[in-house]
Length: 314
Ligand SMILES: [Zn+2]
Image 1 (cartoon, rainbow, N blue to C red):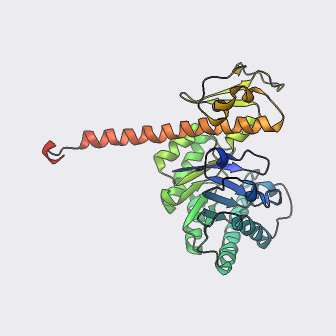
Image 2 (cartoon, rainbow, N blue to C red):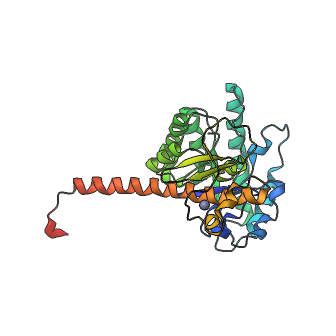
Image 3 (cartoon, protein in one colour):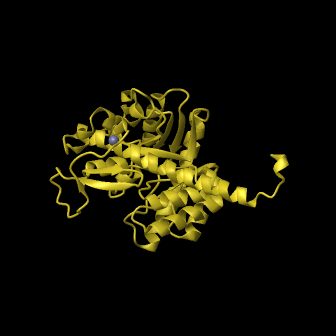
């Protein structure tokens, strides 16, 4: 199971510190040409359409324009990069009315159809995998949306519009989607919580993405793991009522702290925010790996208990 880091043009170059870090980039104009700037190019990359950016705008960009931007990003990657292209979807964030939600689902499916035709005619089939976005607001609409995407021809799927929902609802929605498309074909967009990570490991999804290391760093937060904790920088001017403040570094083996852990505690400019995001990524990854190991260990323990064979067979 892979943890993709959501990346944008002013963020830290995660793969320069962690060469195997999978990256998700939105094909929005500001990100054009940015892959060239990575010293270490991503080995696994999801290129989505940055649909969330357009949610509040009346007009949508042309499908072909976004596709061309995705292709330009793709062309800057190494030939062996594992690339997934996501079609333009209509997020359900800020849509409260049932008819609006239904219309968003229909528009997403229409875009999915148009996009796959465009993808197939582009000759990129050997270079990338297309991903269909499941947009739904309840069990029935998620199932319908997933079935329609299968009919259109998708074999890889992502589920979106989970933000702003209670985490138990998010987990239910991931499960509904996984039941239809198979968990190993499912990516989960925009995950922030540790509980969701636990549930996704249980469900067995293929991957998820998160911008949390960068978001937290921008809001003057530092993560530590074992156990996973979040602290606010004492030096920040943010009006935070939290008592969880920290003014000096704790022991850490991340690439930033190995050089100078005090850099994390300098609130700005942005260079220090980037260093904080690298440190935060390190700890979220440690936490995620520990969840994976713990679940794997639990499975081994169960299989040992259930094993009734003769020890001579070992
Ligand atoms: Zn560190």
